[in-house]
Length: 316
Image (cartoon, rainbow, N blue to C red; front, top):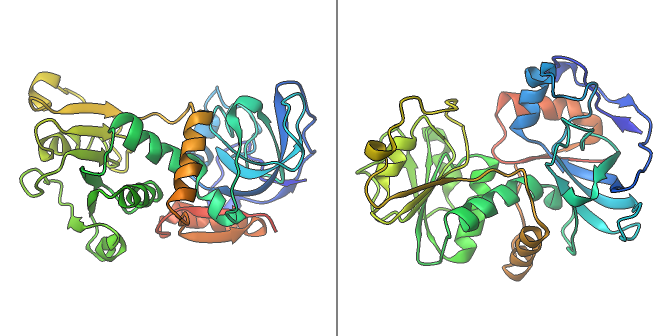
């Protein structure tokens, strides 16, 4: 099979397809014929630095998600040809991931889905939609009556959150720190240029999804109304932790702070996502589509950050 295999620091310009053996099936694992996959910044981090960490199984095929069909169900009880999505659980780090024509994956992180979505649209769903879904419903307990602030909305996760909240009927305030990208937030009710100080400038926000992260998190906490909830899911601001964070002083009275970690997808969540997509008539959006033979170009597009939204790669 064709695959991307890395064994050290690999800039996008050095990414190549190579020949690799199709994995042998074993109990508890299923062989998936990969039809497409979405790309994520965590794979960029893997290529450019994390590949040298001792916990990475080297050499490794990157990719924390994929969509495709069951090629060999092993002992799962599923049927060959069933459509599935797979994500997380160690994909592309502890074991080989989705940047390949076939992937051997633990059955507990593979989910059969009933959908008519084409492969490219389906590839935009797994990790991005699961993270948005968990952030909005498990953490923020989003309801139609809410006014939702999405801080750092011009990313794949931000766009998915806008799609979900809009279909639910919420009022959406979306931000970007680049004036040129305000036009990309037309689906929101209000697009705001983020200068790092939203508190006092946005009104009536009951829930906030912070994708910028610790860099502006204290300000986000002050931007919601009393009784509001803030979910920190992203780290687009490049700051990974809050040093000297004082919960008593930095969390306003009556405001709640939570966070979403996407490493444990469940069948219930996946079923809910696809039911929502079907009943609301949503066509999951993506920013750019590449063929697998163009994987070098896809990685370059990921690294330069010029694609607005999810990058998906479809098998030739």
